[in-house]
Length: 156
Image 1 (cartoon, rainbow, N blue to C red):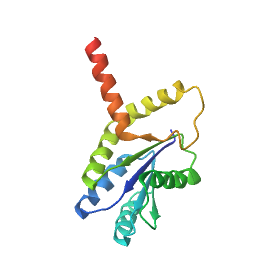
Image 2: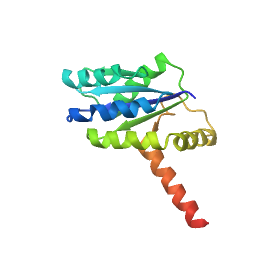
Image 3: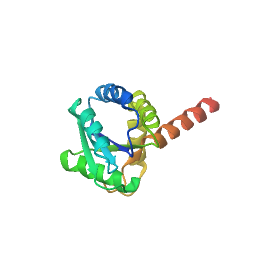
Image 4: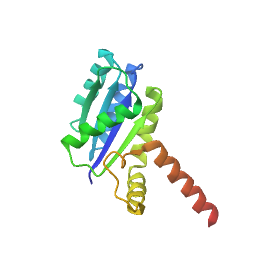
């Protein structure tokens, strides 16, 4: 399966979490990961480069100036699209590293249901989406999956 994941970092405060990110990325062998440094700090870019160096499926995009999250997602998507032909690309944006790491761990745990959910979403669309329109939020997908699970559990 051709899956990509874009993670936007506005900062990287806690250097201790680096090993947690690396171990989560190593669990995603089939996923191409793009880390987007949305900060002018060279320190954040260096930390993300160190993390990417530990996993062969990970690349880093450096925005020279702080940009909106939408622009950062698009720059990550361009990077993934130019390197690979990916069918499903999700993104994670968080206010801090702990929030991003939690969402990443949720993605690792729910990888298959998220893919199945997004396959179904794409199949239900009557008009074929462009590459950028087909990007999906990992947190929104998890919320929808959880709400559907609760709804079907209540109906039974």
